[in-house]
Image 1 (cartoon, rainbow, N blue to C red):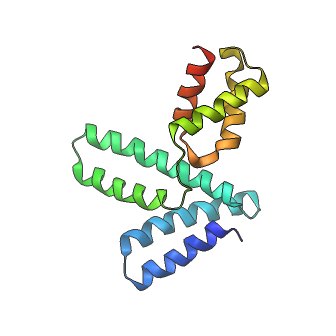
Image 2 (cartoon, rainbow, N blue to C red):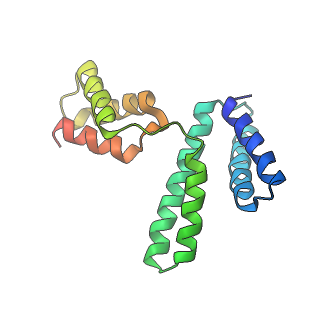
Length: 149
């Protein structure tokens, strides 16, 4: 079993003992997403797979926050921001923009990428190397800038 999954299960038990229903519900939601994929694909998920699930959940929360702000639903904005805080606590420390820039620059040099036509190759390699330590839109923006878009 992956260490991240073990940590989630341990935190779930702790939240239940402390009667922290909010944290319990957020962790249960993540655990059910993990279980769904494990059942569908009939495999044990790795930490990287679980991080990808967490990143997807974070993206969904960010989108929801933007929509709730537009609709003037501050109560739901606050709820989603609390959920984000819990979800982010399970991801590795995010990379600085400067570190992402260095990695993308290295990848461009290694792959010999020359323009936007090579964007797919650069993004694939960058996402594989950086993983969940930086958002895709940050990597994309830096890659576009360095490729001269």
